[in-house]
Amino acid sequence: MRIAQVGVYFAPFMVGGAEWYMLNVSKELARRGNEVHVFTAEKYKGTTLPRQETIDGVTVHRIPLRFDLSYRLKLWDGLGDSIKSFDFDVVHAYDYAQPHTAIAMRAGKDMGSKNIITVFDVHSMIPRPWYKQLPMRRIERYFAERSFPLSDKVLVRAPELILPLEGLGVSRDKIIVTPSGILESALEPADGQIFLKEHGIEGSPVILYFGRMNPLKGPQHLIEAAPRVLQTFPKATFLLIGPDQGGYAAKLNRKVKQLGIENNVRIMEPIYEHVSKMQAFASCDIFVLPTSYEGTSQSIFEAMAQGKPVVSTRTGGIPFQVDDGVDGILLPLPVSVSQLGDTLVELLSDKHKAHTISVNAKQKAAKFTYNSLVDKLLGIYEGKYTT
Image (cartoon, rainbow, N blue to C red):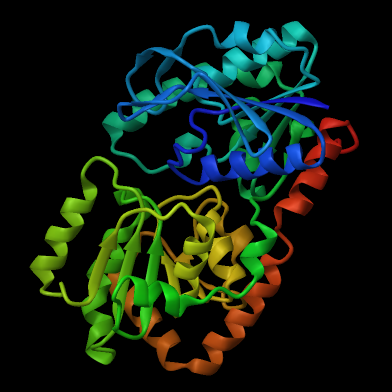
């Protein structure tokens, strides 16, 4: 099968979970003998990569941009013609509220390909200031009207996203739930001590945040909860690992200094290499994602794969990933710093509860590997799944 995968960025530009998802899906599809082509942006943060190369059996076509205002607002130079220069069986685009998806769906329709859209987030659900929310709603509606009608199937990563998509005009019979995935190797126990020694981390217990440094993701809540935890566990270490967005890491560092907890908090650069990333997850006692909104979280599944108790929030698709009190703890929104701190203290103090949650978490994560995800995805491409 000849398959086009279309997304804003692709390896080595690993901005977030969407990029990891598309990379791992594309590699697994290629490993199974499919001809996989990725169409993606040529440039990110001033770095321009070759127009074409092969990565793990996947042919990557990088498209120049005439206009690049933001992650979401880009004017692609010849994307549609590039896609139509091949005879694809499937055109699969990621995210719906962006120009590349509308262009890809039109190209696929012109070729008679099967058109698929994967939805990571319903953007009108994401909390934003009103001055950002209003234009986002218009952008979302504009591209939804130009993308979804040209699609054959719309894939969502959690059932909680179905109703909002119907509100955007997507018919229910088009929507299929296809969860996020993890590599099989993520389930193998990693050596967290290697990571701790490599980075000179000695404090214990270790509490990990792994994600973008962005206020919507909530790393500031973990920092604000740290003093409450340190009252009971004065040697605790808080690790915050991930790419900086808009200089927010500097604000977090200022918050750390204001609270006088510099010796207990480490804000670190992103980790992309798989083994090192799994060692980071293995190094922690608790994984925390106090996010204001999340479609689903790759990091949550990877922490669960390493048998770590997860503390997150009841928002978006996270309740699909985490069964509160069984394989993790979910907090209500808005995040209460005192409640977050108390929850962490309770889990660190109650070893039996933490162990039970950890065992259940690992068992759940084993159900969400890319092998099983691609099995279903190929079935969708072949028309074997209708809902």
